[in-house]
Amino acid sequence: MSAKHNILWSTLALSVALISQNSSAAAVAASASPFPTNAPAEKTIGQLEQVFTFHDAMPTGVTVTETGRIFVNFPQWGDDVAFTVGEIRDGKVVAYPDASFNKADPKDPAKGLISVQSVVADGQGRVWLLDTAAPNFAAPKAGGAKLVAVDLATDKVVKTLVFPANVILPSTYVNDMRFDFRTGKEGTVYVTDSSVSGPGAIIVMDIASGKATRRLSGAKSTSVDPTFVPVVEGQAALVSKGPDGKPKTLGVASDGIALSPDGKTLYFSPLSSRHLFAVPTALLRDAKVSEAQLSAAVKDLGEKGASDGLEADANGAVYAGDYEHNGIRKRLADGSWQTIVHDPRVLWPDTLSVGPDGYLYFTANQLQRQAGFHDGKDLREKPYSLLRVKIDAAPAPTR
Image (tube, rainbow, N blue to C red; front, side):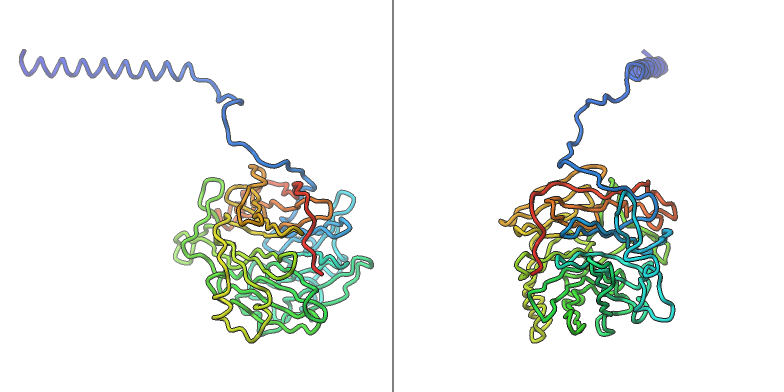
């Protein structure tokens, strides 16, 4: 057979093969059907209950008091925030302690609320409001970053503690807090500085005097993990364009915080990390302990997943959100972890709070879908949720 005939036969064979292949593909396509609803799929964990839905501004913090009252807060992050602290009453959220106190005083930043990031019931008849005085993560307004205590019996402000200038840097963003009334004349409060542009830290404040110190400022345990890139909903998250136009992942320092039931151990974690850290509170409070000694005393308890909020219960268990996996995890006394919630509806679990009813309450606010991380397009879908799951444990005592 000539070379010309060989080429013709090869071309014919290839054509027949292609026709056969296309016919097979067409046959498969014609016989395909919609994906069956009963096909194997990822399983959920935990029996979720929806406590409340938010149809306006995005919430971050939640706290449940010893009598079951529920408070939430809405930081000034760009949403239309009618009030920065509210109480859920009779199926709606109302300004707390009232509408007028939820307005900043232009003449005195210490009076009136500017932008509250966290609310915490102290187990002693008060709810505390943590005012960053830093809308949209701007530099805190001088004299505005503060702790405000409201008496739950009268719904009146009974104490205001303005953070002293020595602990508030231009980059500071006070985030979450835990109380211990077993130390100090009126107790001690531990606050995380979750800066996005400067050093993270644990701020330790004496409630009676208002004196405060920055501890572990810029330490590895309170800092952003430089190798950390969060992945949420299958995509790199918290990514925006940097000044040079290139993608940049938002780095958030020490964020979640929890106190052991005996008050002796403080747990904390940067938001931009998957590690849980612990430090003896006695060393945090001791001015004679150097920063080097304190850093050496910090224990890295290993990976727990990437968390926003942390919480502890009366049995010594520590709970951590896992925003990369739409879940909540629990650290047992032996140091092991178990997942107690895994559900696609848990879109960015933020703050955690143990209620007196044996439930763990938490907000799910789709933080990763904000417009700043998606070229100005807001991908959040209202409503945001307040959820809870039964844990059969009481809140960690504060006294």
